[in-house]
Image (cartoon, rainbow, N blue to C red; front, side, top):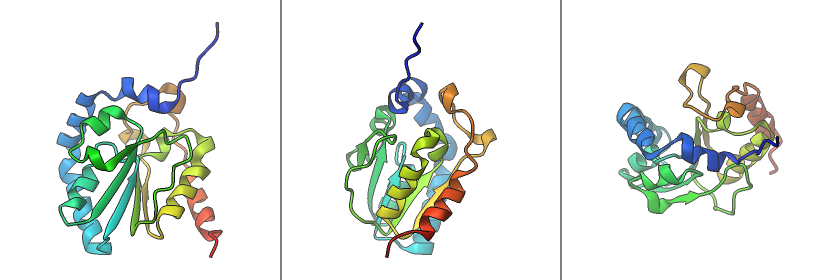
Length: 171
């Protein structure tokens, strides 16, 4: 018997159906709108990219402030459920990102814990190449969404890697 490993972007289609994203928007839409308001007040960015943006809840709220927004997500279901789907690139986050330019702010919220540990450095490298200002969070074990069993363990070492990577950033 041979076990087949499926990339997370393909597995996510079965795990996160469109109905999941509607429920998340209903439950967390106000929270993400408030986060967008705080981002706008704190940094007043003109351009923002969100890596692993899902349906783009933060981005759509920021767009209401006139911010130029772009998103990247691996889930066709999330992008199809998005009100800003034309601004979201579908991409497998386990692979290197294409050239996307520079932004005033790069966001990556509750994404890293869904990816295999061997792409953590790549994710951080992408974030620091996209912006000098990064908003990065990871879900706590009790707040995580469902994911394949092989990806169920939190990776507490990732924030430390972010600090190390930022300190070695080329000038």
